[in-house]
Amino acid sequence: MPKNRPPKPNSPRTQIALRPPGYRSRRGYEQALVTLTDSRTKKRRDYWLGPFGSPQSRELYHLLIAQWEALDRRLPDQLYAQQRIAMQIRSTRGAHGGESRLEADETISDLIGAYWRWTKTYYSSSERTLIKGALRIVRKLFGSTPASEFGPNRLRLVRDDMVRGDPHGDKPRIAWSRPYVNGQIHRVCAMFKWAASHEKLPASIYQQLKTVPALKRGRSPARETKPVGPVAVETVEATRPFLSRQVNALIDLQLNTGARGGELFMLRPRDLVMEDSKGVWMVYLKQHKTAHHGHARTLYLGPKAQAAIRPFLSGAALDACLFSPAQAEQERLAARAAARKTPLSCGNVPGSNRVQSRRWTPADHYTADSYRRAIERACDQAFPHPDPVYHRQRIIVPGARSDRKPRTRLETLKEVHERLTVEQREELNRWRKAHRWHPHQLRHTAATIIRRECGLEAARIALGHSSALVTDAVYAQRDMDKVVEVMKRIG
Image (cartoon, rainbow, N blue to C red; front, side, top):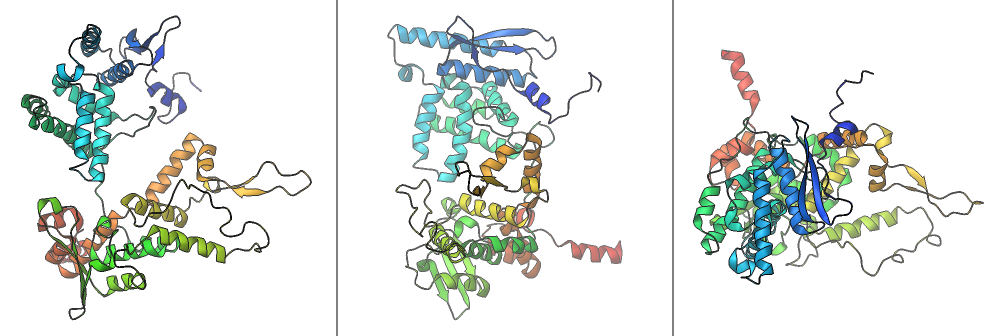
């Protein structure tokens, strides 16, 4: 093999070359440093970061790596020197007993803490999760930086870190897509807008940050995402045998109403308005995606949707959620006990191996994550990889007596993941990505069916859009068969 042949993109040698230099301490010193190499001149330079293990030194390390990557791995100087001087000034001010840091110059970490406490009373839990991901990167790079010194250049470094990802960090993070990065940068700017409205910072800082343009398609290194499309009904039907009846009912409701999953998770019997004379049930939602804009949202349940709900109405409390993961877990355990082959006189007696404090307890209603995970597990069972090496194998349980037949058990998913090589894990991820579907695709499928059968206006009302433009451009896939017939005649 020639020595100068370039390595493969996913080879271990390439992964090591792409890994950034580590945070370390020099022998005989209590100072942290990192050694960077210039990508053009191959010159190496040591950057001293401060006391080893201190939060300020780790923050400066992450900042240096971010600037080094943003400069195409050229040696950074300017921002590093500014940050070092600012750290020395703040440490000197604290040593001489001056004003407290919060009164003199509030840092980014202080601002994030105050803003995070305020978000608990304003934003939903899903939005706060997105805000948390964006602010974590800001604090990692500029946590000890005075908030008044945060400007467009620092915001660009935060954005570059979002685009690049952090696959080798303590908490690995994939590279974010361009629309997601733009949304996260908007959330960062919203924090400074809030700070200006509460007289914590001058409004000019927020105005300067808004001068940073959003990433444009085809003009940025950020990856692009494919538009969400409908899932084939045949694919959904192949997944159903591996789902609980609660999840299957949610799938039926989404396909027959076009509702979002979050609009169905906490559906209760008392929420149903049964108009038997019209043959349609209605649900007037109080909590939904656009409720804060003052928009009303009504779900219309036809005969098929009613048939999916009726089995859960018998014996259900008026205030209890119709689709309960706790009930699904009880039914799963009961089915497993009914299929038991070991006599009751041998092995565990049902209910004897319960722990006092469980690490996981099923909730009374589904969430977006639990609903998605249930469908992902069913997809993995319905569409297994054809190569047996990716399947769970039986392994010997250690500790058995030598004069008896060894006991075996199936591998856990974690043990399968540890057994596979890096290339095999990537192949398994590609297979799963190609054979999985997620719940929001059901809404696109319903929109496409309603638009084809009943028209665009009916699809708009069913999906709860204020404008048919959103329904037509985003959700309802156009019927190409009509275009084909037209072009056969006139084309």
